[in-house]
Amino acid sequence: MRKEAVNTSSAPAAIGPYSQAIRAGNTVYLSGQLGLDPETGNLREGIEAQTRQVLDNLQAVATAAGGSLDDIVKLTLLLVDLGDFTKVNEIMAARFTQPYPARATYQVAALPKAGRIEVEGVLVLRST
Image (cartoon, rainbow, N blue to C red; front, side, top):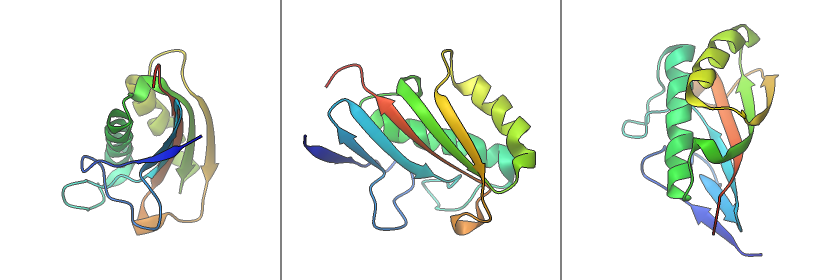
């Protein structure tokens, strides 16, 4: 199976040796997104703004791959503070429809650029 990099200027550029996403057949592996504004490269302030930006960034990469947030089947959330879990869930519930993606959430000691949240995902496209 061939793998293809997915890139878009509508989401922050990778800050290391990785792709924004990799498409393999109908499956797209979305790299972790921080709450970075793709135009300025600056981190949004606060967990709510960062969470919304993370989802905007994931949507931009999903769109570049030919999909949308609705095509995401699995998410992994990394939070610096599990105390943010309830607020993050509220924002995510407003952006995703049922059936919701499978999900795992972990608390981590730190994230790049002092982010409060990072989210990666897997989506399955309806057709190639």
